[in-house]
Image 1: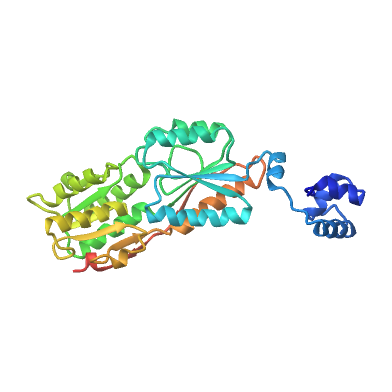
Image 2 (image 1 turned 30 degrees about the vertical axis):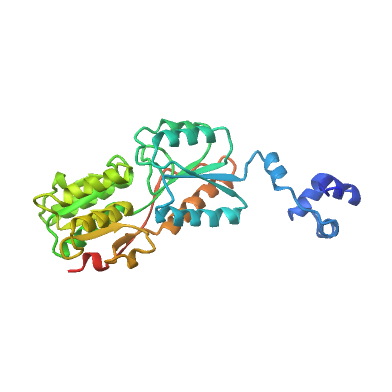
Amino acid sequence: MTTVNLKHLAKELGLAVSTVSRALRDSYDIGDDTKKKVMALAHKLNYEPNPYASSLRKHKSKTIAVIVPEIANNFFSLAINGIEDVAQEKGYHVLIYLTHENYAKEQSITRYLQSGRVDGVLMSVSNETNDIQHIHALKQKNIPIVFFDRVCDNVDTTKVTTDDFESAFKGTEHLIEQGCKNIAFFSVPSFVSIGNKRMLGYEEALKMHKLKVNPNYVVYDTNNAEENLKQVKRVLSGKKRPDGVFASVEKLAITTYHACNELGIQIPKDIKVISFSNLNTASLLNPSLTTITQPAYDIGKRAATILFRSLDKKNATIMNEKVTIAATLIPRDSTRQ
């Protein structure tokens, strides 16, 4: 069976291919009678447009890439949902790349994308990303980038985040209000944007309440579950054990629960725990986990909307700005007095 294309329609109607194409796109410069004739024949012959051929003519792949450290973290799953909803409305495909918190893998992914396989990139960097030359190289290929959650402040583009400093301040203050005076902080590396801002919020809250930061209470994610558990147990089994834990990412909160279980430490009687988390089972944990819940879906949707605003306009630039969407503190049993 012969595939019906624009040439077939144009020949049948005695029109130019360009006229038929514009009629199908409901272009303003084509008369209503011509549009009706074209649409009627297209319907009669079961004409289906070829989006791939259209993309080639426009030199667009109609595809965007989303680069994230992981998807086991509920934040990134929800953010991707927001991104995909916008992409679907725009008729774009979404390719998802996982760095698994590995800098070398992140470099490899960005090199692969430099060939023009995608029209734009939405990115949250790994916790090993300290050098950003590979990101500058991607921008030099005129591939627009928008960051979300974990951002690179030294790259001129839009960064969409939650209010990390303010939320960390409020979370630490919540622990203090519940009676905690010796608060540990479990974090991603400080050179990662969220790690740095959340650490500063934690430190500022302690300072405001005349409490000291104890460097022995600070643990950084090693990207190794066994090593993380070992480090957390070291802090929780010390001579002067903390009475509160602030986990800046949810996996370190879960590690804290495991460590407390193995050490016979009761939450919240012996120690109180709060975490940045979008874990949908936080309320089902024993005890239920107090969380600072980020608007992950909205962050993904906003980042995608900004990227597509650039893609919809030829040679449009993305502004170098920060977009902040507030998180919500949800008290549960893990910090109950």
